[in-house]
Length: 245
Image 1: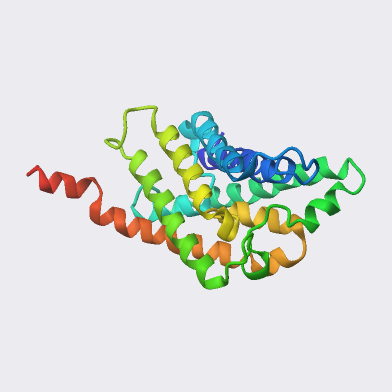
Image 2: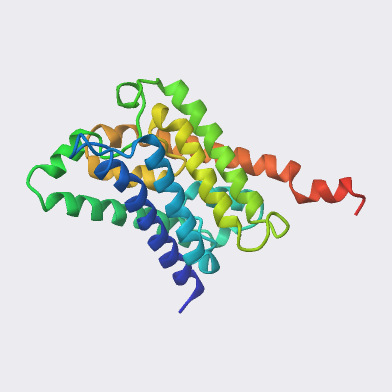
């Protein structure tokens, strides 16, 4: 099979599972259908992190397991991925995210009223203003999304470097990093850091989320580019210069 096709399929599978694992947990297990059962912010954060960790071990050898356009942007900015060969990543991520959100919607549609209930609750979509979990405005959401995306992408850039961490441990750091940024930012924006995840849930929310999703494409992209710029300055070549190599 063509390498580009393999990469696209791997990224689609990984992103679909990330969406099922993350937003799926937020929809099914935060009290919406059973007030006595909620995993809370910690549970949702861990669901995102564990989903990424598992997918990294599953498809990392095929595509590097970006499963996030922001990560791909960071990889392009630092020369780890050739921009001319990046299309399968982006296509796979956005299509996979929509498939994952569609699977959640299909499950909800099997029980009368559950899909509309989840949509009314926001379908785990990202938002600002009245649609921020704690009512944060667009400026606050922009700042936190840029910062947490930059932090997360920096973690990925560092752990995917050949000298970054012991072989095989990168997915653990990336998964914990994703969980960390969710713990910080869920109350502010419901945490994007991933435009594919944001578009996927917005499509199935079907109302206000589609009008706000631009922010969760633009701000994570800015954060990813910022992370790339930082890594170019402070990455391994700086260490080599400092050691006199």
